[in-house]
Length: 285
Image 1 (cartoon, one colour):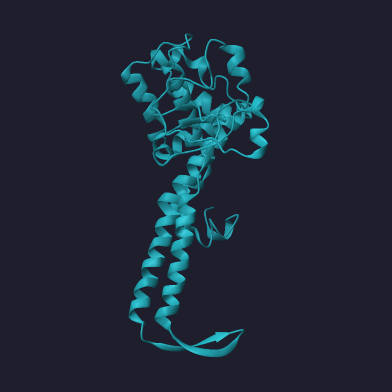
Image 2: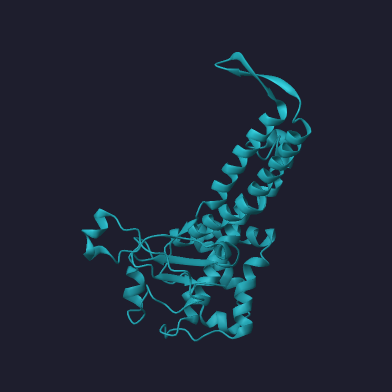
């Protein structure tokens, strides 16, 4: 029985109409969709890496199928993933099995199906999925909403620029001001907050259970996991140098997280890590 009175929280009950736009980004359906995107892009990245001899590069048609599988993901597909999860009792594995099932008719993917999730831990998939969800939700819903509020406040500031009112300090009457000035002040503060929110970098990692590429090195020692020639070159970010890092030169190559660039949140399904020298493991799709 679907009713606001049976909802688990006001978000999907009393305020469901106000939060509907967030379902595309913060629902379990959306999370499953992004897991599918990560798994598909990782397989494509492996096949595109010339030093990874276990897989041949996919044809252009199959590569496009892997790129489209998340874009075409529907609610009925998520329901099928949940059905599979009832057997696997593992949410990420269920997404992988759904991909195998959905793409079983593609001979190239079927031959490479054992390499879905190769070398990964569940958190590799989950952290990237969450980063993509948060960034997309922020950019598509939150920031435009704040922009509309700022625009309305700016209009009120202009409309009431000459409307006098009494300002207070410490709760006591103080000096004259105008309602327009106060609206402009709030608008300016919101605009600053919006800029800060929009500038937050979403971090992602794709380097195994403990962040050391252990499974990658053990299973494919011929591949330099930190330096694959996958996707397009990315902007190199200089490492943060501190007194601690200067005195620990031997640890310079420890994997660290790195931010998703603007274009990656929409088109990137697998983002990797940077070493302290700024080298990336990445798959752009």
